[in-house]
Structure formats: structure tokens, C-alpha cells
Figure (tube, rainbow, N blue to C red):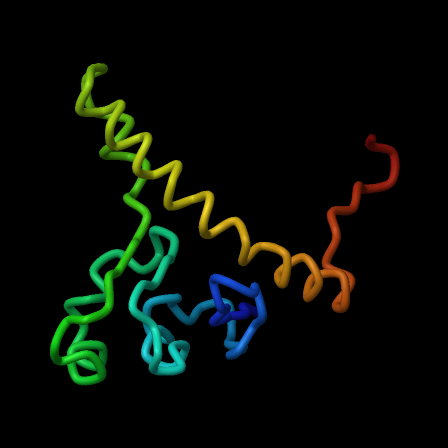
Length: 124
């Protein structure tokens, strides 16, 4: 099971919750999450290319939403060390600090459904 949530950046209040089977992609639920007043959306790398999707283009024809999508880690790791990579890493850290506010509702949901890390008998 997956939970897809829309959260207000300022207050941290969850305004939209969609649950799907685990095999449903994150990006397929994107058009159902915004409430319509967003000017900036932050999301993880599962949403790369979301602004090009047809249903998003229909909802936001003027392109007013600033999509702050995390970059995939693989291409960043392959980059040569230097100022360009340092700049990208700083940008990604800034994006992640905003997305971190959304993790608390996931913590609550996991506790409600008792999805906690457990150890097998005989291991520690």
C-alpha cells in the first residue's frame, strides 16, 4: 500500500490523501493531489517529468506552478567533483529540507497501521 499526500508548506497540514496499491506509480497520482492554489510544488525523484504530463498541462496551462522535483541520484553521483556538482548538491539539499516537512504525516500513518521496523527472532 502507498499513501500519496498533498500538504500545505506553511502549516504542514495535510489537505489531500490518496491511497493506492504499491504497484501504482507516484507520478500517476500527481494531478489528484493539488488543491488548485499552489504556486510551488516540491516532490521526490519519483515525480521527474511531471510537468510534461498531459493531465498536469491541462490543469496548469499557464505554467504558473514551479515544480521543485528532486534529481535522480545516479546522474549526480556520476558527475566529476567540482563547483558544478557542489552547486547541484546544494540545490538538492535545499529541496530536501522543504520536503522533510511532509515526512511527519507518513510517520503518523505508519504508526496507525503498525508499520514499524521489526527484527526477526534471533537477530538484533
